[in-house]
Length: 115
Image (tube, rainbow, N blue to C red):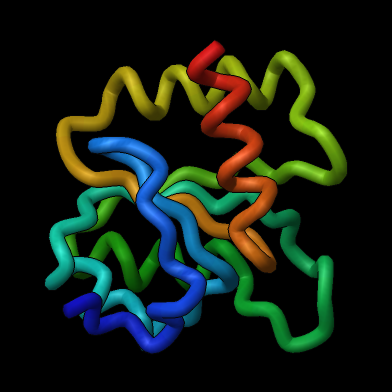
């Protein structure tokens, strides 16, 4: 059973990549326990009031041994963002969890990086 509090939003896209909605620092131990080793945030900082800053999540993730990457996307990903996602996926040696507000941008970016 997926221990993460947003189980209804967790979605595995392929053998290496899954998506979810907004993460909080408190979610990270369960994410690490679930076997994820890399995090990719596709949400720009400050998009919504109360949204955790990427730097705060990245700092907490590092303490748990999780790599984290910030590829902020507004609207459709551009070629630079797609290339950055390809680089993250190529360098990853474990399970990757992408997130944004709902998971949609994280999914779109991954699918575009696969093309």
